[in-house]
Image (cartoon, rainbow, N blue to C red; front, side):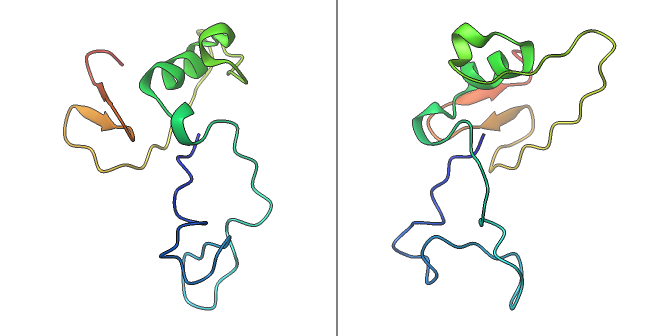
Length: 94
């Protein structure tokens, strides 16, 4: 799940490429994004985590109560919420 608004932004001096450091490798090359743009929503995020393929409309995790899962979510949120491009997911809902 990635909003995917940087690689092809008109402000990106290297269209279609992303770099984490000067002279580094293109970290965008070859990636496959299952959910991007308008599909990056709190509802789809929860659906992916809970295995609800109908709501997610695509790939979901196949886990159970014994699964240990690490989620790395990078955003501009604040304590108690995760900021999505057009909505928020609050800690109480998560």
